[in-house]
Image (tube, rainbow over all chains, first blue to last red; front, side, top):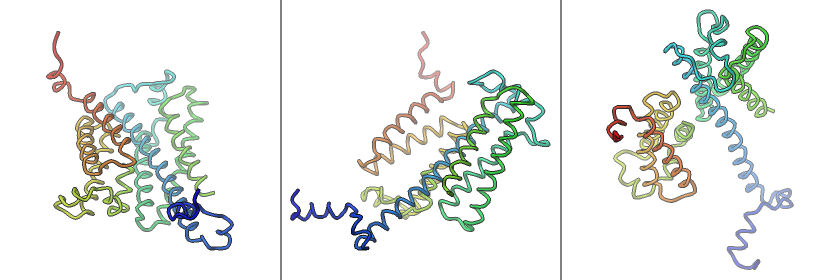
Length: 177
Length: 108
């Protein structure tokens, strides 16, 4: 490579040289790269959380529509979806679990959007986000236990929702490490 | 829907994808146009997610993607947009109301 030509020199300059980074010569370049990486990491976390919330919205809307139409949902794996979805544990007080799930997923997607757009107060949204995901993850654990030990039947949609929420929790946990 | 959030975050930056000739045709400011795009994107996404008026949302997505491909020119994400256009077109055809479908299906 001809080190005297201007374009080639420019290309060499574009590659971070860590020995010079230590000396602070290319610190602004490193700062820009790290800033971009941090922004990308931050955006990716919320992009994933938002996508998972969107999947949850789609799933719960499907279940609500099937329930209102008095139809059985498709049960892709296993045969006991209807048994679980019509059990005594399918409601908390008078609110069906699918409605609660939908409210959670809608709230989660809005909060993720608020955090990305920068709607104040950010600290409040951040805490509410963590708290709601923690509560949802614990409730999902409880519902999974009910399927396993009490109802003794597995529901694909319920497990999918639980998996979605646990994955959201895991992503948030990794993000905050 | 995610893209609509990113557009709302920085509408001017996303306006950079607009070709200069297309930006000149806008009857509103670039920021207003991009915010409108974000709202359209979010609406289409919500309708598709909830399976409400799917054919209409998919048709809107087709029109939107054709406009995007026309006004943004060839860039790194053109291939993705072509793929999305194919998917939206396929969904439009698949989710057309029965009465509309019957007009295009020949009886044997």
